[in-house]
Length: 259
Image (tube, rainbow, N blue to C red):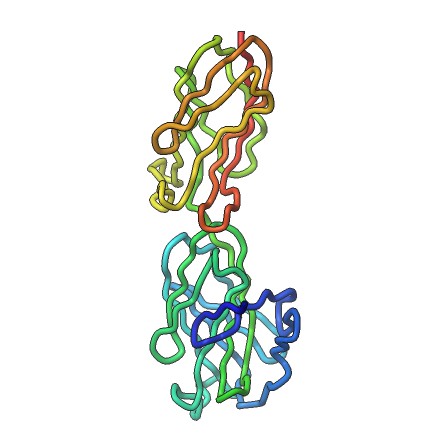
């Protein structure tokens, strides 16, 4: 079964940044010279330029979860727009390496919107078409950010504030046998709740290395009950997972002593 996006473009997973694609869908097979020497891709307020000689200049910062505007312009040898490349004779097709992570919706002319669903890298192929022929094509590998700068984990009366990336495994003070309430708060760089992290898009789980020592029962949004079952030691992983493609957005492992 084939999946389609944009103006009926087949979904394929690109393996190489540039002109190569997987399988039989070879994007170079019908490529023609329509006078394009540079494609300018603008996403939000940022632009990147792709030359016909393989050069790349500029960059696109990490995209937030949600929707952002995108457009392309096509320049000739003189650095000016190629006069005969206009909507109608030409069209823009965009396909995603992972439609569970990001999708493109075609708008007017050579523009549209990118909607991102899950953090992580995703490749979008921007393809200028004239009929069935490809006039110019480049692959933009984008990084989708969760918007999480830190996570506040509360276990009973103890609180840990953990960086979203690069945190070393932590530990809690010993907890007694019995229940302790757990709550996770996902914060942006300003210390406010990260707006894109919602219960409908993400799930929270706590996994114990030894359920004879520690167990977890889910509760309300990003919360639940950690229970010390019997004295001992267990590693407990706090995980935030994207419901779009099941990728792990955040994980922190804590050593728990039950006494």
